[in-house]
Length: 190
Length: 186
Image (cartoon, rainbow over all chains, first blue to last red; front, side, top):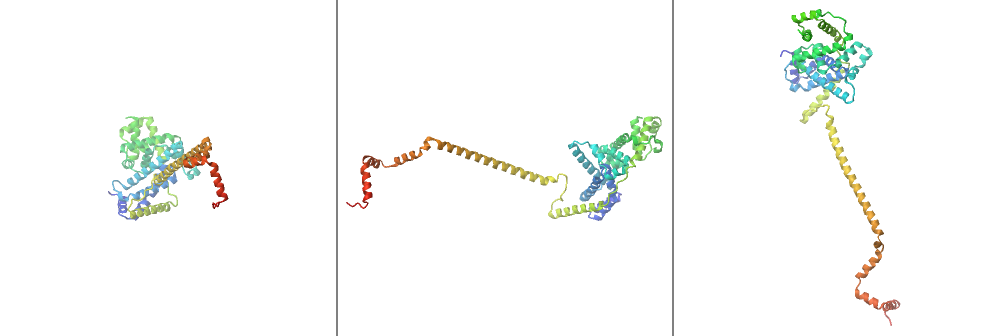
């Protein structure tokens, strides 16, 4: 497989810890951003991103290159964030609290101080999406993965992934209607 | 072509960076609803761009490498001991909690049994004391001295008793004489 990161991972699996540090430095920011978009909370996202790299460290012995390295890493991150989010939601349900309220309240202090209403609305709208729709949208839109790669990350078919992205965008369009420009030239996109 | 198909094709083509097929383009040119949807989708792109990438805060690397060192130590320790490295999961607390709970449950059962035995013992003692009190109040027991006297009589030699009944005065006098002249002098 012609992926230099796979070669680094194999090198790390053979015992070269420097290769792991190289991978960490390459993907650190992307993982923090990705976890932030899935979890909606900066502190939780940083902790989750660190967990992802620790899981990667622990998986060196069992690593089998079957896809691009980024797909492999995003898969670890996605499943970890799904689990974290599900855990938080279970706790909220157990306490009788609404899930969306927590998600919108999970923005960190910096956002609150900045009073960026648009960002807040966007964060709230993203939080309202089901976990798989949110991951599908973030992988394709923000992380720039192809449909096939993103489908591989969240273990669904390519057509199912397209459907998830479509539904996510439809929901966001409805929730952010007041922020959308009155008219947009469709022709520019074609 | 149905509106739903055109909308889905539009989103798919948007991310695939491919052109919308001719049929969909023709539909879009005449369908107000699809046109609005696609316009909103383009607007959504600009909104999504408003969410910037999150960069790790200062100290992120320090915290991470400290955690990594901990994992390495655990791994080395486990390899030396010949056991699998300790995995910290959300159920790990059960490893400590379960034995403690079991020990507490056993202690509780033992304590309850011990308490029950003590209570039972006290109840029995009280019953015995009550019985003794009742027995002491019985007229028979109050005349126990007399009963004991009868028992003494029952054990006595019949001939001695008979002799004593026949000549109580002689015996009495002889005893008195002995008392006056213990050496038996005339």
